[in-house]
Length: 76
Image (cartoon, helix red, strand yellow):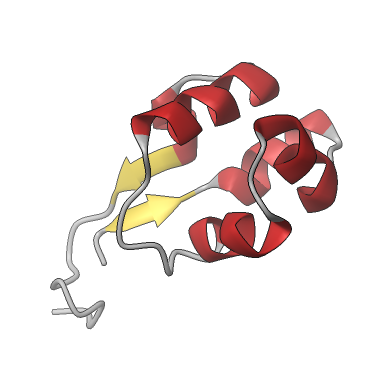
């Protein structure tokens, strides 16, 4: 998928664990892992807003578009 999730980067910058982030955002660690590993098909704006609030960042710090991949995730 051409959308890349950079939650790991923000977690490292904030010295925060996945479990702590999940607790503070109000989602399960399993659902956060799905999002963090790029396997999510969608993200609610309320979840994105909560992630940004807890991590003190902008949505663009967590999500980016990467050219050169088709929707199946295969490089062209």
